[in-house]
Length: 159
Image (cartoon, one colour):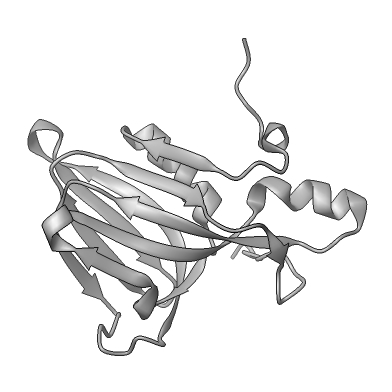
């Protein structure tokens, strides 16, 4: 048995869950360079979750798009962090609902008894920290893919 590859996902929408830090690393890779507005974040205190509607770059399709000479794609995806107790942010103005944010990575900082903190690291020194009782993160594509408006893949030049 071998590990799954991006290419095996084909045109199917993603629906992934993370219950361990290693699982979250996969979701982090797939959401790198996702963009969203402050208004796309919803803290649902009574349901103990933070939901974020992302415009996710389809990293799993990048190589195939290059080979076929077609447009790179993005898709709207819902990122949900469950078992959330408290949400804090840095470099994010909650009242500016049109403020555009770019997600660089997701990580988990473990605490005691399975609790910890999910950290959304944003471009421009921003961050959102979500204290959780247990790691419970899902990512679900909720629209069909569309051509990336920039017509380019995100680029991260090495220093």
